[in-house]
Image (cartoon, rainbow, N blue to C red; front, side, top):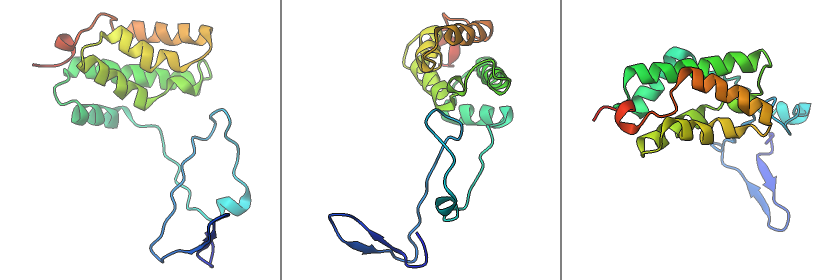
Amino acid sequence: MDFRRSLDVPGYDKIDLRPETRFIATMNYGYAGTRDLNEALTSRFAVLDMPVISEENLQKLISRRYPTIKVKIRDQLVKLYAELQRKAESAEISDSALDLRGLLDAIALIEQGLRSGDALEMCIVNKSFDAYERGLIRDVINARVPADLTREVVFDA
């Protein structure tokens, strides 16, 4: 990953890299187990700091992925995500609840026939391993999204 453009793979061989070779690395800074990269490694990358998705862009994302979702439900899910984001930023809950993939997975499970409460429990609440925090997250969800929503209520036919 420097001017030599080659990798030594132990037990294999030296690999010369073509000029168009690129490496992409991701890191969720602040997650358990992550730590700052050392200067030598950081200097080999262009660092992109990705902000948390805006409410407007989350609405677009959900609408594109689930075009038959009802606008009222979509907007409640977006507000739920924004509220979890605010609570994570103020350290009321950990970042584990702020899981965009989890929200999208919950919507997919509802589309497949699971009730909203069960889907959100599995895909968001259960990402926290602290019982007290799970209760806080559950309270936020219950205040925004009824637990008994079915596919027929959430999506247009």
